[in-house]
Length: 459
RNA sequence: GGAGCUGUGGUGUAGCGGUUAACAUGCCGGCCUGUCACGCCGGAGACCGCGGGUUCGAUUCCCGUCAGCUCCGCCA
Image 1 (spheres, rainbow, N blue to C red):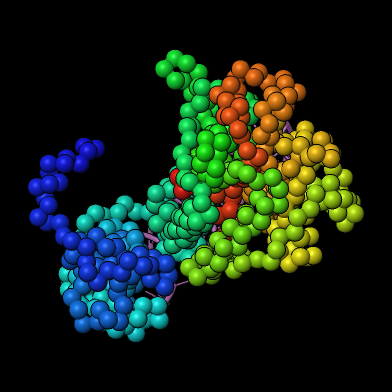
Image 2 (cartoon, chains in turn cyan, brown):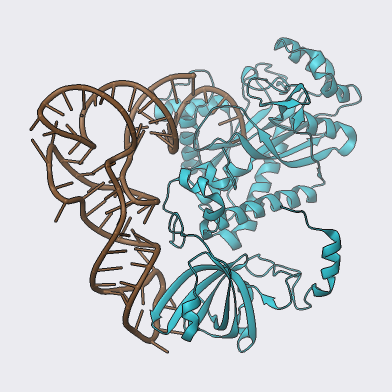
């Protein structure tokens, strides 16, 4: 496809129009912005409100549904990026109706409607077919998408036209936007760190190898080291929204090999509770922010009560006492996560629980050990609706201690030299956490498979 | 890396050792002037994933294979 030619674009400048004066700078009651830079003649489905009645309107979009109720009368539901509108067609226009999902432009006069769903409709006097759609591989205008995920993935761009899919990714957008705004408001600076790395980071086995001009490079499995470095670099508080890559062949309903990690890291924090409080505050503000637009679709609505915090060992004790469940390796397994989450909901009325004080040997080397019990760390996971959506904690900031931790795991300090550098120049106590964006999206909406919350799951 | 389950028109499902392989939806044709899961009538569309075996006979039972799904390990 040829790139847009600047010259041509400039030549067409006369056909471009200024933003409409009437367009608000704030979103409407559903949180959707009207498009300020839309071409002047075109309206969007969302704008078809009672004040448009009687006016000439032009809409463009996709034919979502056609209901022919008589030889000379049909209703057409037209969807565009803003929503959908009902178009009334009569006379010869019926013959011009293309297959569903074709792109069309219709114009006519807006009028009040007797429809239960659309207070205002467009009585069409012109219909232009822009692009005809092939027959669909599956029904797209049903309330729920019927095909299995593999087929939906194969036809992802088409499947994404379904309102449920649209909702998922508009919610995900709102979620990420809220993350950015919340932490910006807390004094965090947004950063973007490298994803192509010359050396493995935390472990090594689960990294994707890539060829970097003949050299072996790796895709970042987390921005962990970089965000710590940037905290020490003087930004003090940083966040990142970015993809991370895990080369694990775990094909489950809650794992992706490439996912969006919502990372934060902050300096001058020496109580892990501050991190948990920060996350809890964020999550509750997120639920508040999403409720007006997505409440109807969300499994959890509105802010939650305080989320209980308990040591991992206490959680394991509860599981053993209540469910006779024995931990094999001192860690909680997925079934245990579901059980402890349900337990928290029963006991505290909130489907979330912070588990902290994980043993040192099941956390990364940089996890800060507790003073009174070096076998435990100042770390935590957040279990939300039965799934681990966050991992976080305080990190070792003393360079000698960090070198020791590396040595203990038989990791080569030379490999970590660039990471260690900042620790020699006054590294403050610090910590942070990461939230899996797709997991959170899926859990909020009650989706069965995380792939439903990944917009283009190619693999 | 390990375990289990599934594979039937485009899609979603039913079914059975011998069936014209069923239903819904989608698609095509006809009818219908206020639908909103529109309705009514008619039609096309499946060698039942693939290969082998058992059997008089396999879509059905067995083995293999491929694909998909679910779970475990690991993680967010």
